[in-house]
Image 1 (cartoon, rainbow, N blue to C red):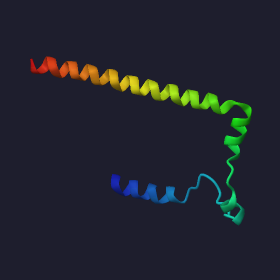
Image 2 (image 1 turned 60 degrees about the vertical axis):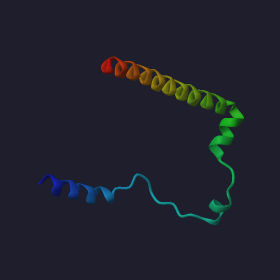
Image 3 (image 1 turned 30 degrees about the horizontal axis):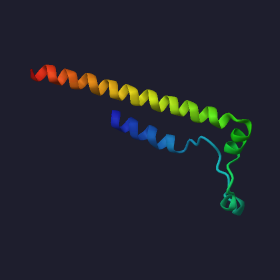
Image 4 (image 1 turned 45 degrees about the vertical axis):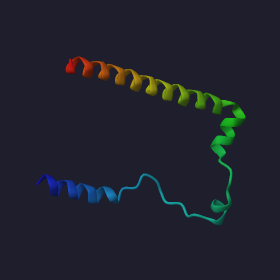
Length: 80
């Protein structure tokens, strides 16, 4: 029963769209600028974004290194 319900819900969810489809034009293929990045670079906010991403990356890397050291210490204590 659960499998049937899941399949029915998946079939109905396929018809639900998050946004309307817009037609792709020739201008879309020749567009080489990214408006959001240009605006952020112009306002100086791109550096804030890069800084935040860098801080998150450093934090995740530090957490992984710390966790690895703790696990290594536990493994050494377990084998002793």
